[in-house]
Image (tube, rainbow, N blue to C red; front, side, top):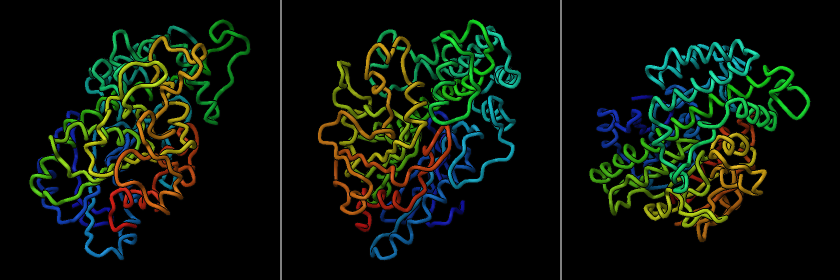
Amino acid sequence: MTDIGVEPYREITFDADGDADPAQRAALATVEATDLVMFAHGWNNTPSNARDLFRAFYAPFPALLANAPGVRLGYSGVIWPSIRFTDETIPNFPHPAAATAGPGLDDATVAALKGAFPGQGPAVDRIATLLSQQPDDEAAFNEFGRLTRQLVTASSSAARAVGDLTVEDGPGASPAILTDDTLGLCQRFTAALADTGMAVRPGPSGPSFSIGGSLKHLWDGAKEVLRQTTYYEMKRRAGTVGQLGLGPLISQLASVQPHLRIHLVGHSQGARLVAFALKGLGGGARTVKSVTLLEGAFSHYAFAERLPNGLTGAGALSDMQQRIDGPLVSCYSHFDTALGVIYPLASALSGDDASELPGLEKRWWAVGHDGIQAVTSCTTLTLDEALRDGVPDSGCVSVDAASVVKAGGPPAGAHSDICHEQLARVVLAAGRIGRV
């Protein structure tokens, strides 16, 4: 068994299609516990990074439950195939010395991309060369865009990604990052990086970024275009693993251990994974007692009964909170610049223009940026209120966790600043575990 400092611990590893490791599945069914917390990591992780995250996040739990008679808490780490960009720092975690600053890709990131996109090795190598050489040439940006989009279209993700909003699947709907002019995208992402506080090279003055002056500074944004384009593969994968993998596995576990109380926790795209697991639960399953989303990287309208601002349809997870025998809690922070600045730009559809339609950009905010939106009777609490008074026993709850989720540098900000005793206490409160 993997040692992460808490017991009993069971790990469950899924492949990109949502198939679980058979031996781990069997071991999970033998866990002896009254309650089981299952934590899914985000998209910027290797299995080793994920275990470090599990170790740090779970560390406060035993002490918090020391005076909770009758509670035997089990722990599980949900590992799924995600991409690790080594230049993204995680607060209080070692930062690899080999990580490449600026537009270039280091060997570890190149290897991660090749592993995530089988058969695309030559395209990845050429992308790395372009980011390293930074040609001052519009044709080079066009080639970069073509190769970057080839990664996700070849893996079939973009066209069949599970949308967070039903309107995303409407006629002609396509992500701007997969269709719009590459040079324009690089300009927008370069500007967005500057908005997060990241140091980027200044571009030429004047109204045009492509006529006169150098284009080299736009390679800063090009690397972010690559990172966010791969997000679409992770989006599809997280939804698939949740709905086709984790959801059915929980239903099977319930048939073996009907009295085991299960509590789902997810960070970033892992929050999307555990949310979509609700879709994969068998009919009538009441074994999931709480879901806690930490800086969730999916739409804040995902659970919406009806989309606001004149948009039609509902969220892709509308009413899925009814499948929880307890609350759905979203912890969010405005210090998370990955979700507050970069995510909306990466999520927008081609043809949307926030400057022409004031407030439209709010449609693309994430649940980890401002909590659950457009759901009737969603309770909003500060972290202090949630820790002092607890959270409701059912329904949607948004918890402003900015008082602790606030550390981290650009461009992601506090996106990964989630290993705090206070957030562990939120998970326990949501699950009514020991009533702490």
